[in-house]
Image 1 (spheres, rainbow, N blue to C red):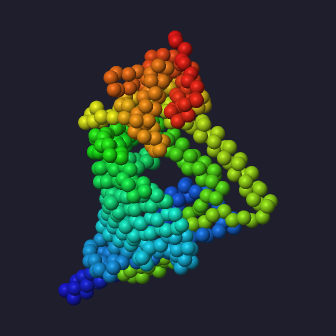
Image 2: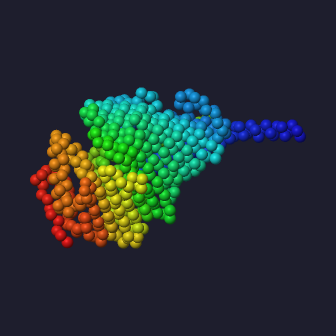
Image 3: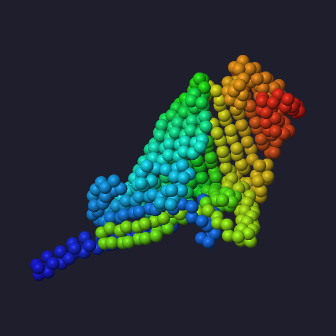
Length: 498
């Protein structure tokens, strides 16, 4: 009896160590297949899907993947470093262009010193949580008038079981871009993401922080921005989407002039989430069809070898473009595309009113910490009635209500005038700026309080007013006066008094 128990125990242990790697190999393969399907769905929504016979492959990226099965795995990453752990498995993925693609990219001026353009690892826990890292190699590009150097990026990602939530931290390397006499320098950037998948949308928070951005012209500093922040927070509640996007910076230097910190919030409320999803997909389809040379992307699993303790896979990301297949076929394809564009455009026109039919509101305003910027302040709102009966965009505009207030110093117009006419002296720029501002004040488009200028626009019940005065073709007249800053002969239209 004791021998039977010992033999049974040994058998159970052996079955565990032999059976569980096989089981996890099966689950890992299923996960791999699901990721291929999801990736293709995402890629095809951004491009025009073409039959294989009507497309030419212009680039191929080979993705070699090694999977070490759990529950105990001992794998090696792309650099040969060993990793031991307990879980479903350990993934190592390496992506690189194939030889013909590498040669073609090099001929265009794009290349990387690394053999693998991306290295990725992922650990899957027994409960299905995924911890992944990614390293994108440095890239360089150079042609007759453009030079670009980018030091790559490193990413850490955590996905919850069922892929329902995502956390990511991205460190982006230095970027240098030169075109003719203009230069853009970004020493580093950081991205933080915390998202949840809810009602078909990824909602949560995401932020981009850039310590410094510098632009040069003829090797002289033109603009410098310090601690730029772009932050977004979104949520879906009761099928309504709300979003707050914040853009700000600690300092902006243009030429030799310093401007204080600024920070603005874009608030979006009461957007119909289902209608927004439909509109987003329709817009992607429309954009893809508009481009006659739009590219098509597809990811396929070319090989998959599943062993007992480890598996290997090779996937291929193909980038294709439309292939000329004869005059008649091209004409038929063009007619089909035009017909589809018309249908999608009509559907977009019908869907747009439904996006805002639950009382959508949009507003831009300074954050409380920066309510009094030294040079420029903007407050704007756009609102729609809660029960919106609109069948097209024209009726949508008629029912909207908008209010805009722009408060600025003369320095803002002076800066724009100097940028448009660099050959002018400082005195000439000052005189031209004051002449333009005096025109706008006398025409009623601006009101002046000491050195500050106010532009207030209100639109309600189909009527437009500027600074409290009802005006016809106001926008066109303001544009005409703007041109007058550069072309003094432009006519000034005096508004009618109410």
